[in-house]
Image (cartoon, rainbow, N blue to C red):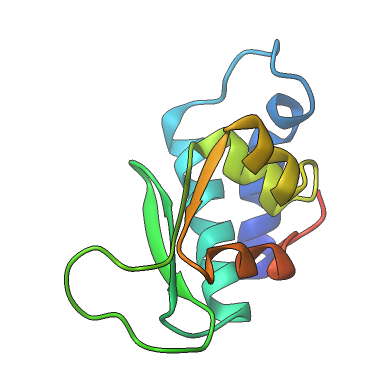
Length: 122
């Protein structure tokens, strides 16, 4: 994703990320920010051993290792859009989100995603 487009997408949701009481941005704005950050993660950490899911917006495979081709991947990180954006921008630590139950990380390699976060500083 073009860095300028990513910055613009994050700017559209930035206030909401800093303060949950602020009115939630529109679905299109959230989708652009989620897709942009997830695809940037996939570009920064290429591979197919971990799948990062942020339903209903995006699922990407990342991190070098054994390639997954069929069925449910053995290493999955899944969370909601706001939690993902907090992680992707460094406003929330992976372990904190995991402990709070805001994300699930299944499989022995799923937690390797934390090494690649934040994707971009807000």
